[in-house]
Image 1 (tube, helix red, strand yellow):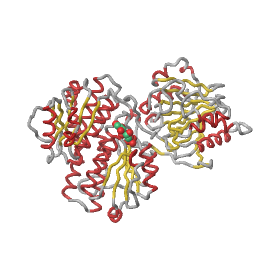
Image 2 (tube, helix red, strand yellow):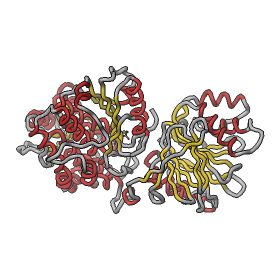
Image 3 (cartoon, helix red, strand yellow):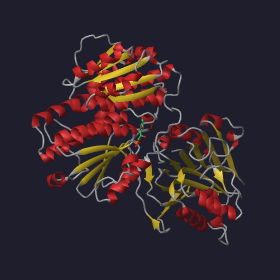
Length: 613
Ligand code: F6R
C-alpha cells in the first residue's frame, strides 16, 4: 500500500509533491514525508500523521528544489513514527528513497549491510534500499550517472518482494531513477516536467500522457528526457498512453466526501461500463475477447478469484454464469485460492476481478493459474494496471477513478460486467433461453434509470442511520443472490462505521447466530427473489420476536409485519438485483459513519489498494 509521488521539472517541487500526496492518502495515511534536491544538500522532511501535518512542518515552504520525491505510508514494518517514515536515506545521506511495497528479505540484507559497517535507524524494510544502493555505488571508482543506475539495478536484483522505488541523489541533481516490481508506478509526461505517482488520478491535473512500467524496467528521468532500460540495462523504447479520465473526475465535485460522490456516480458508471457491449438486438460484444464455442465447450470449470468487495461481485457473477452457461463455477478469495492447491488445467478459465488491478493476493493467484495452464481473464477498473499486464485477456469496468477507500461504484460495475460476460458466453454456447437473455439485457440497460430511482431513498436511509449509529452489532441476511449483497452490505458497514456486522444466509441464522439477537441489534434483510421472499420474512419474524430492529430492502410487495423500515427498490432480474439492493446499504454505512463523526473516505487501518499479502 502506501503512495509515492515524484516531480522533476522547472517549478518548486514541494507544493506539487504535497498536493500529489494528499490525493494518494487513501493508500495509507499514518505518516508522510518528502525529499528534495536543494542547492548543495538533500532535504528530508517527514513526520507521523497525515499529509496536512507534513505541510505544516517549519521550513517546508522554503524548499526551492525542482526535483523531489514523496511518500504517504501505511505501516507494515515498524509502527507509525518519524523514524519509520519515508523518505529514507543511506548513512552518508547521498541517496534518498521512497518505497511502496515490501522487501521480504530485508533481514538478511540488513545483516549483510550491518557487517559492512552500515547502521540502521528505523524498523522498516525500506531502509536497506538506500544503503544497499550506496554499498554498490561506492564500489565504483568514479562518479558517473551510469554507475548510479548500475548500483540501483544491482540492489534491485537483490530484493525479494514487491517495490516501486524512486531514488534521488545529491551527486546527480538533475536526475531521478525509478523502478517497480509488483507495485504500481506511473510516469506522467510533459515537455519539460515529469510527474510520478502510484496511480494516475494524483497527477491527472498536470497531464494525460502516461508511461506505464513493467516489472524491473529502470527509468532515468531528467526534466525534459526519459530513458527506459530493461532488466539488463539495455535501452528500450516505450509507448506513451493517453488516459481517458479527466482531472475533474477525481475531484469531489461539491460532495462532502468521495464516497457519497461515487455512490451518486453509479448510474453514469454503469452506463459507461455497458455501452458498446449490450444492445437488445445484437449479441453481446467483447472486442477484447476471442472465445470460440469450441473453447467454451471444452471448459470443465471457471474460477472467479478476487478479494473483499470484488470477491462479492464475483459471487454474483458465479450465480449468472452457472445458470446461463451451465459451466461449474466457483468464486474464491484470492488469499485462500493461492494456497489451497486448486485443481486447474488447460480446461479451466480463471477470472480475476480487481478494481485497482494491483491487489497482491489476486496477482499471485493469477500467476499461479497461468503456471498451471489455465487461460486468465482480468476484470479491472484501471487500464495498464499490473493484473492487466499479467492476464491473457482484460476487460474493463468504466467506473472512473474510485478514490474513497470503501468500494461502491466499482462493485456495481463489476456485478454488471460479470453479467454481460455471462450473456456473451451463453450466446456463444447457445446454452440459454433467448427470452431470458433478452429480458436480462433489457433489465441491464434499465439499470442507470433504476439506480437513480433507488437513490431517492437517501433521506429515509439517513433517518434510519440516525436511529442506528450508536449500536454495536448488525446482521445482514438474504437468500440466493441476496446473500451475496448481504455480504457486501455487511463489509461496507464495518469498514467505515466500525460497527460489528455479520452476514448470513437467512436460513442459517437459527443454526447458531440467532443466540446473539437481542434488543439493540439491527437485522437487515434483503429480499428480491419472489420465490424466496416468504422464507426470508419468516427469518425476520424470528429476530423481531427476539427484540431486533429491522430494515428491509425489497422489490416485492410485502405486508407490514412490524418491520422498523422497509425500503422499496425497483424490480429487476434477480441476477443483477445486488446492483440495486446494495445502494441503500452503501448510503446507510455512509450516513452512520457521518453521524459518528468518522473519516468516511479514509477509514482506520485500511488502504485503497492492498499491494501486500
Ligand atoms: C472494500 C474494498 C476492498 C477491496 C479489496 C480488493 O470496500 O474496497 O475489500 O474490494 O481490497 O481490492 P481490488 O478490487 O482493488 O483488488
